[in-house]
Length: 176
Image 1 (spheres, rainbow, N blue to C red):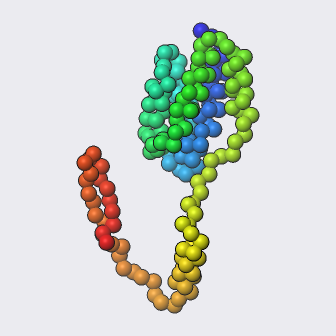
Image 2: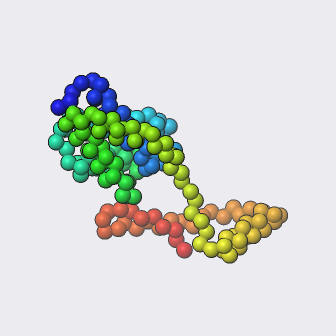
Image 3: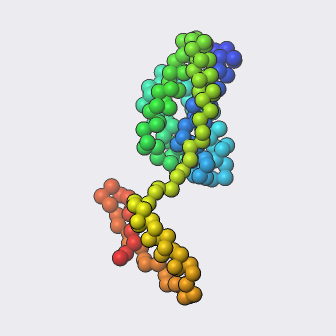
């Protein structure tokens, strides 16, 4: 196994590049899901994932997926269900395998590809209105409300109804 400090730093750079370019983590950090220390948590996750590989030499991809999913849930209150987690974990496992086998040239190429891909940060976009007609009507309604001289409504919002589902989750809905 390649245990030199330089080769370990190369693997570390690969893990950091893969984790930091992951759109799910980018969105979680940008939107403040991790609180005020979101960027530090992202760095910490990269360090913990790298250490996880070193502490557990015979990891399966599903184990890495479970570990990262747990970290994302605990640190960013985020459940990853967009299908990107298996891709990220496959890449991480491939880099670790290259590092273990001493295929440092291949690992360097993989890391270079990850770092040269200056992908734009993931952005959260508001969903478009269902149709232009509805959107125009909403805009007109808002303009009318904004220009009216009537006092603002001070009525309290309707109370919320709580229902416990079969699986133990509590669903909160507005009462009609």
